[in-house]
Amino acid sequence: MATAQAHRKNQSVEEASMVTSGNITMTDADYLRIIIHGVTAFELLRTALEFNLFERLEAAGGMDLEEVAAALGVKEQPARVLLLGLSSLWLLEKRGGKYVNSEMVRRKLLRSNPRFLGPLVDVQAEIINASLVDFAESMRQNTNVGLRHISGPGTTLYERLTIHPKLQKVFYANMGDASQKAFAQILDRYDFAGVRHAIDIGGGDGTNSIELARRYPHIEVTVFDQESVTRLAAERIQDPDLRKRVHFHPGDMFTDPLPPGADAILFFHIFEIWSLERNTELLRKCHAALPDGGVCLVYNFVSNDAGTGSLSAGLVSPYFLTLASGEGMTYSPQDMQRAVLDAGFSRVEHYQDMGFSHALVVGHK
Ligand SMILES: C[S@@+](CC[C@H](N)C(=O)[O-])C[C@H]1O[C@@H](n2cnc3c(N)ncnc32)[C@H](O)[C@@H]1O
Image (tube, rainbow, N blue to C red):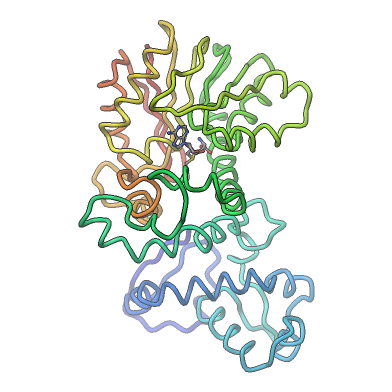
C-alpha cells in the first residue's frame, strides 16, 4: 500500500504522478479528503475494474475521452466524470492528450499482474463495506452488529457465508489470494522438514495446506474447517499426489475434537478473529492435541506493539469487530506470544519482519 506523507506544499497531479517509488506525497488536506470521500474514491476504483478500464487503456496504449466512452459503452459526460476522478486519485495520467495507466495501476490493478488487488476490492464491495456503517453501534454493543446485512445461521460471518455460495466464493478468492502471498514468506523462513503431519485449523479453501504439501513432498496435511468450506477446498485439488496427502476434516474448532496424529498445527488467520481469551482457549486445545516436541504456528495480520499501526492493521480491525465475529482485531506480536505461553507451550519463537503486516509466532510443546 502506498504511504501518504502529509506536507503543506501545493502539488499538482502532474508532479505527483512522477512519483515512482511507491510512496505518495500529498497535502494533509488531500489526505483527509481521501478519508472523508473514501466511499467515492473506492467506487471510482471499483467502477474502473468493473468496466475493465485499466486493461482497455493498457491494450490500446492510452485513449482519449471519446475513445474511452465508446469502449465503455457510455456517454462522454459520465466517462469524463470517471476519468477525472481516477486522474485526481493518480490512478490515471494524461500523456499527449490520452489517458494512460499510472505505474501504480500497472503494478497492482492489472489482472495479469501477480500483485493484482481485485479480489480485495471485490470482498470489500460485496461483503464488508455495507456492514461498516454499524461500526459505532458494534463498539457500543461490543458485538458484530454489521452481521445484520448478511442473512443466515450463526453469529459469525463464516457461518453466514455457508448459505451464500457466491459470497463464499468472493471471500475465499480474496482470502486464498492473500494467504498465498503471505504464506510464501513462511515457506522462505520456516523449515518444515521435521514435520510429518500438520492440521490446518480453520484452513479455509486449503491454499496454505496445498502450498505446504507442494513444497514438502513428505508432508501430510489435514484441513479442518466447516463442512461446506472443506468441500470447497477438496474441489480445488486435482493433482493425484496432493489428493493423497491433503485430507479434509469437517468440524467446529470450538466444540469438536481436533483430528488426531498431527505433530504440527497451522493456526493461520484465526488469531485475528477471536478475543484473546477465546484464542488462548483454542491454543490450549491445540497444545493438548500435539505430542511432546510438536509445534503450533500462529500466523496472521498484526499491529505493532505500540498499537499505532500499520495502516493495514488499523484498517482491517473494524471488520473483525463489526462483521466477522464481533470480538477480534489485529493484535500485536506480544499478544500472540502471551496467548501461546498462557496456553501451555513451553517456548515461543517470534519471526519478525514477515512482510504484509504479518507475524509468525511458533509455540513448542
Ligand atoms: C480468515 S479464514 C482463514 C482461512 C485460512 N486459514 C487462511 O489463512 O487462508 C477463517 C477460517 O476459519 C473458519 N472457521 C471460522 N469459525 C470456525 C469454527 N467454529 N470451526 C471451524 N472453522 C471455523 C472459517 O470457515 C474460515 O475458513
